[in-house]
Length: 103
Image (cartoon, rainbow, N blue to C red; front, side):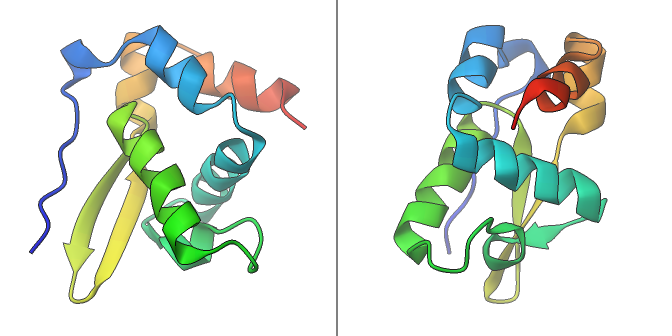
């Protein structure tokens, strides 16, 4: 079984967050997850149903490694949630500001 690695709050850095959110698909994934206000599977948060699962998994990996989401295994499904409270603790208002100006 795959174990997901998540950076601690101390290891999350602004450059990694900005790099992860430089891709419009990842911004749309993050917006979808925030709107859902709970755990989402990769397919539930997909901004477009035509995205290949491998590509979608890569986007989620980048978001996870940047510290933006936390992923857990539930049965056969990977469920992710935005680490909004933790990000706001370290960088107050960052996500809200970025998403406000994103297309």
